[in-house]
Image (cartoon, rainbow, N blue to C red; front, side, top):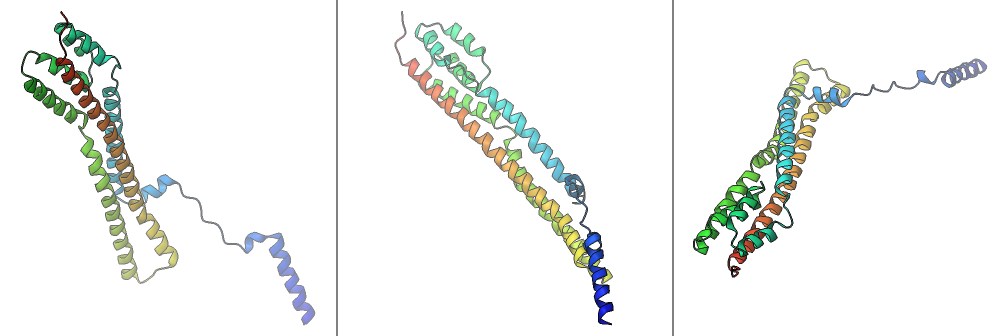
Length: 235
């Protein structure tokens, strides 16, 4: 009897060694990111739309601001030469050859030369506000997406969890695998919403920093222009 048991045990050990797959649990199949996103539910559609909008707004504003920041280093030096030599027509034509906000503001100041200083300054300030509004266009869309996307994500997760627990309560049958599988798929909307919101927030802050640079350049050029007007005109 004892000898027989020993032989059976040895035979079992041999089977384990020669065929280890019989004693291990099959590993779960890998799932692609696209498949996981598709399992997030219907609310993944508005999240995708928000992501596409954020990408479009960012690159559209990025290219616009990059163009607005391309200012010739000798721009104000040339304006000074034209103004001090009373060559107003050439100064106006020179500013028209540029399309950045600084040139538009200086152009307005040149057009008001001959009027009181406070009127010139007020006209340039109003033009600066208009130019700043142009560069800030659509920027609020990014801030809205940064706040809305996480909410959509949480809403999708809550709806998914409600459906999951309703199914469990109605059937009375559940396993840990069923619950875990249902939870991780529903959490995809929360993760996607948070990622989209974070990217939109970072894009918004980056573009705001570029807008601050433009505003600073406008103020710097306006101050220098007003100083030029106070200098004696060459005869």
